[in-house]
Structure formats: C-alpha cells, structure tokens
Amino acid sequence: MTILVTAAGGQLGHLVVDALLRRGVAPEQIVAGARTVSKVVDLADRGVRVVPLDYDVPETIAAALDGVDSVLLISGSEPGARFEGHRRVIEAAKEAGTAKLVYTSLAHADTIDFVLAPEHKQTEEVLAASGVPAVVLRNNWYAENYVADVLRAADTGVIAASVGEATVAAASRADYAEAAAVVLIEDGHLGRTYELSGDHAVSYADIAAAATTALGRDVAYVPLTSEQLQSGLAEAGLDAGTIGFVSAMEDGIARGVLSPVHDDLARLIGRPTTPLVDALGEAVSAARVAG
Image (cartoon, rainbow, N blue to C red; front, side, top):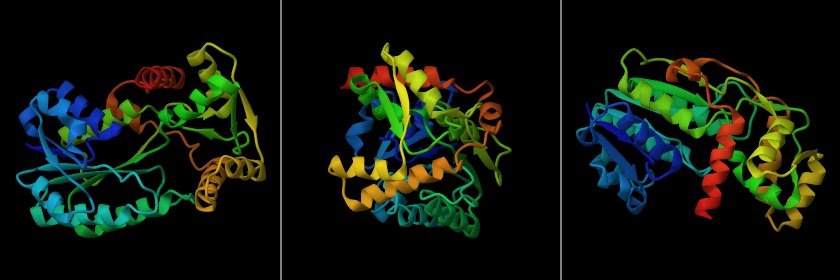
C-alpha cells in the first residue's frame, strides 16, 4: 500500500504524514506531495518519498500518482480559486486507477449557506460522479484559526467579531489529521461521508477565556455589528473584496453554520477531541516560538 498526501508542505498535510508514521506506516509507503518541496525536507530525512505536486500543474499530479494506491486530497488554500485544482486531482486519480481518494471538505458542505461551501460542494459532486472510490471528511473549523486573534489580543486584550453569541464546533488541526490517517489506513470507510467536529461547540467568549489562559492576561470578547467590522477592516487597509469575504464569513458563523456537534471525529480517532484551551494554547506557544 502506497499513500500520497497532497499539500504535505502545509500544516494539515504535514500532520497527516506524522500521524501515518506514528500509526506504523513505513516511510517508504508514504509519498509527500508539495508545491514547495523545500517545506518537506524534514519528511525526506525521515525516509518519506517527496515529490513536487501543484494542483495547477497537471503533469505534477500525474507523476505524483504513479504507483499510488490511496490519495489524500487536501483542499486548496485559496478560497474562490481551488475547485479547478481539485477537479484535476480527481480526474488524474481516476485515470491512474486510484483505489481510495480521501477529500477534506467542509462541515455540511452540501446544505449550508456559507461563503466557503460552494467549492467544497462542487468538489464532492465531481468526486461522486467520477466513480473513484472515495471517503469525504467534512472538517468543521480549526481551533488554530483563532491564533492570529489571540496574538493580537496579547496587545489589545480584546477579541472582536461580528458573530454575536454564535458557537463553533472547532477541533484541533492535529485531530483532523489523525482522522485522515485513520481512514487512509483502515478498510471499511469507502463511500462514507464523515461530519467531523470538536466534541463541544464553543462561543467567542469561550475563545476569549482560552486566550486568557494562553496569554496569561485578561482577554474579553467584544461583539461587533457587521458595519463596525467592515469599517475596522477598511481602516486596516483591506480591499473591498477581502472585506466582503470576511464579513460574509462572520455572517455565516453568526447564523450558526459551524455550530453542529458530531461524534464522528472522536470515534475515528478513538478518544475525545482536544479541548479548545489545550489546542489553542499549544498553537499560540508554537507561533510565538516561530515568530
């Protein structure tokens, strides 16, 4: 069995390779595909085969799939510009006769009204139509998405957002990565769609409390109106397109699109999901060291 992990130069992909190795997959059975190969040198040093793989360069996709049995297609990092890359990987996997393709989608991608959902829904539809044996992992929010907010709060003492009292069923990136490793290794998952989330939905007041613990100083959640959010983003120099995107994203969160809690993630990884305060604390510490 040979497993290709796409986007292995990114944080999630790297963690998936770590999880595969930790679960006993031999390094020579793992292929780490990365747009920037220099980001996975450490994996090569551990015996993992490293290959260039860019969703926008079809020949790199075909080459990376050569001799591969299972593929983890990690969704692209540029909202609004990633579907075509996903489609190229799916088509190449079909051509290569891939036995299993695992795709990292978004929570309830087929039904929610959320600015990030359409490309995931399109990808799931193309994947289903392709006939490639597949598993869909619908990831909810990452706890690490709040690291930048927490680091700003180190100076301001405030986390501000226009989400009202909404909650988010976030989980740690490492938990999602471990679930991906499980379905890549194990049989019995083909044809399944898993809704992955943390065990508990957290409010932004909860996030501020976790930030207080991580920073060792008081942090408060300050609710904003959508107009206040947009005004603040404009003052910070963001362009109109970015302001509209961020505002639409927070509007979706305010409407509860990321609130539903499911037990699929905990069942796949065989333990409770990592508590927000732990996930966020670890991520903030790592960011401070790196910075």
